Length: 76
Image (tube, rainbow, N blue to C red; front, top):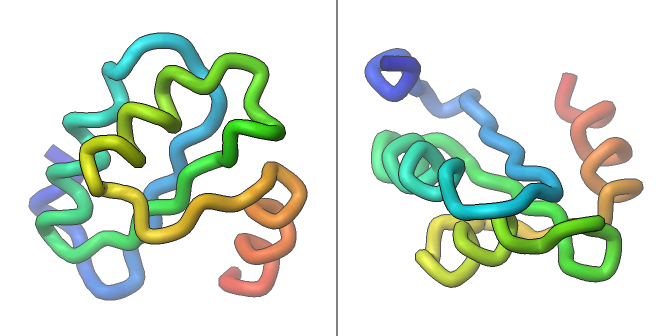
């Protein structure tokens, strides 16, 4: 699993989507030290996936899609 390779520089980004299948992975990654960013409801076409991560308490930050792109570009 990718979770076994998490370090202080690991970032998970959850984007628009239906369902909650990304939630478990986001929780595991966060538990292992990854930072988790989630797309906000206003810019999501379908908010199920991002909302599930937020509701589970696994989101470190909730950003618009434009801000995700901007902050990601600053990190790399």
